[in-house]
Image 1 (cartoon, rainbow, N blue to C red):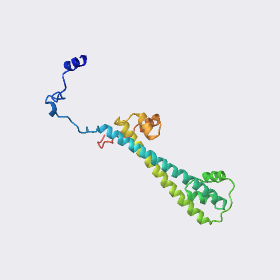
Image 2 (image 1 turned 135 degrees about the vertical axis):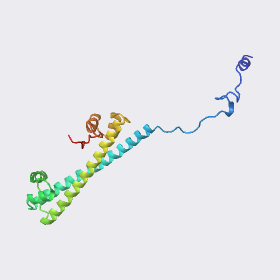
Image 3 (image 1 turned 180 degrees about the vertical axis):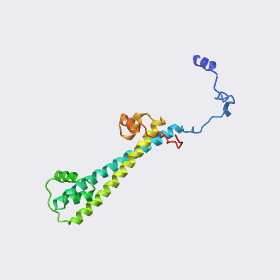
Image 4 (image 1 turned 135 degrees about the horizontal axis):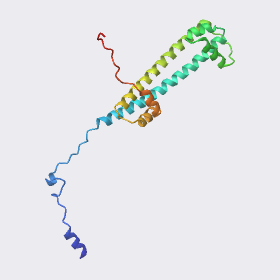
Length: 191
């Protein structure tokens, strides 16, 4: 029988033919390998950049909404007869920008609100807008620091950083140029 000859030539597998010299009792590592610290830092940087991208989008949206609302209030105040100089002082903006905001809104109808009511509303919106712009600039500064640290440590290349941050790779290079470098301290030695 030809099939029988093949079985005779191939030795049967036994428990003693394992991966180690000890046979069936050979040690096999079944644990999980330790994660690479560089990979963990890269993933952390990517997660932080994604979070900052969302934060910046939300804060930019808030700034745009407040800017539009402030422009409407400025135009309405001028339409209601409040002096441009008083509106400019309450908004903390130059009178020329108040005039251009008023002209951009077109025809408005008088609202009947008092002068002090307009000025109080404008001052509140201007301070809220300044706070929103400050929060956005803080988030942008934090993003710049994260990008600079990731580039300096070479955790990710510029294209991975661009994908995570929503910026172009050459913008990232320009933004992070010189960020995070040590600044030479002036010496206190007499000349």
